[in-house]
Image 1 (cartoon, rainbow, N blue to C red):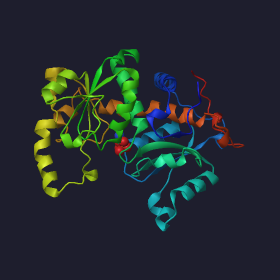
Image 2: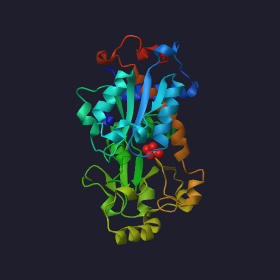
Image 3: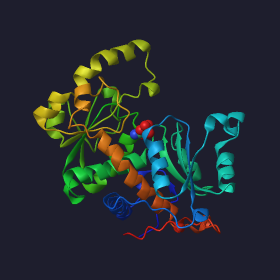
Image 4: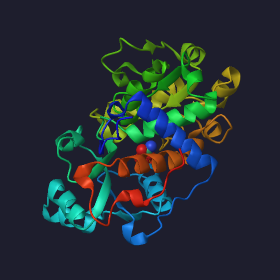
Length: 326
Ligand code: CP
């Protein structure tokens, strides 16, 4: 198998074989409840998060995962850092590298930020969400959750995942639209026309909620990303008034159709999802968060241990983490 990339920008950076390995490793980690602490803390790799946009799930699950691996973990304090004096990101990353960092998970509002670093990365980089481009680690943990839901990876082929909401501004959706078809999953989209992607050719489109619920085996809800909308105030008010009845989902939708709902979070309660559905057994969002730990532990392990010779440094080799469990 080709080694894992040192810059994980997109789900397309991984082969099917690499994704299968990742899912298997995450299953081992979860099943055996593994903590993979290093034998020698001086050799433990240092992992940073550097988040220019807010986050609860992604940042803290990478933090938890790094710590469970026995890595040194630090969150880069943007507000009190020299970024605020005008230092650019490249200089920042080179500084982290000089201090011994091996890997940095970055969230940025800049689309395709990671393209700049594909050829010559200052250190190993993982995309924690870049603008509206991609959120590959969220999509990978969603795939893991779907495997749990349907039983195994093979069972996903032929199933339809319905994705509803603000698809055009969702980096998670953009990663899922690339990732799921690799495993034979069909996709049905549902939402107001201004939230649908321009290229619809490969996907089914549902005209109404009834059709959408019928066509989809499982539903993936997205919040409206109000912070990214360039609409007039009046249009925003109109959306807030009309969206819940036409495009939002409630407990009755779940019960009457026996459908389960995924959501990457955070949720806009009362907009795309009702409080009753959120509190019900049909909502799987918290299970996705649980899955994020083994999946992100597996991602960190596979990237840290990819033996990329550009990053092998005396005394700080990430292979100090023993993970020979495959
Ligand atoms: N799913 C997700 O990216 O959530 P956060 O913004 O809380 O990290």
